[in-house]
Length: 143
Ligand code: HEM
Image (cartoon, rainbow, N blue to C red; front, side, top):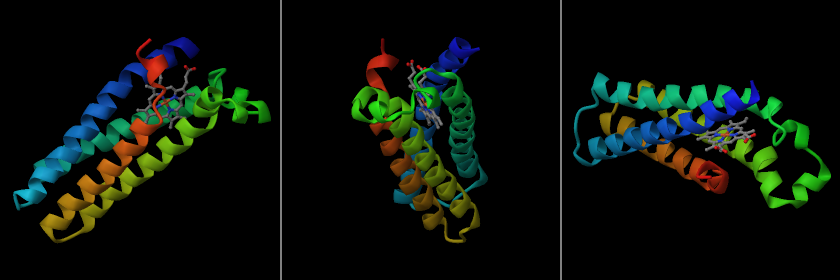
């Protein structure tokens, strides 16, 4: 169960990062090109939103079955940067990033001005991506 989940979470990360990058760039080009916001634009952003939510669910389950997650929470963990990354920073910062991405998508759905809809997506997806990339365990991922 653990190693299957670990593998899915590891490979699904490529898809999440790619979908969020496409969502952010496509919204940026829509904004800078002053295009009308179409249903196609909403769907491109929706793919990034769904991918990040699936990764959130996988991550939450993994957090409780991985020896690097909740079972490893202790005072000593906080003193070791590698352990702290898995047990605290990676989960917390990624949850925050997915909250921002969700706000960006929902605001874009509600807003009436097309440029604001695009900017809501590219700013929030962009911030979310920066947060996610800042807390990826790069060494373990490319091992
Ligand atoms: C968009 C969000 C996320 C991305 C892109 C992501 C990506 C990754 C990557 C690339 C790894 C390293 C995998 C490897 O060693 O091959 C990892 C590990 C891990 N992630 Fe995430 N993650 C995300 C969200 C989360 C969340 C929200 C949680 C928990 C609440 C979480 C919990 C974990 C845990 C516990 C590990 C260590 C698993 C282990 O090796 O035992 N992740 N994640």
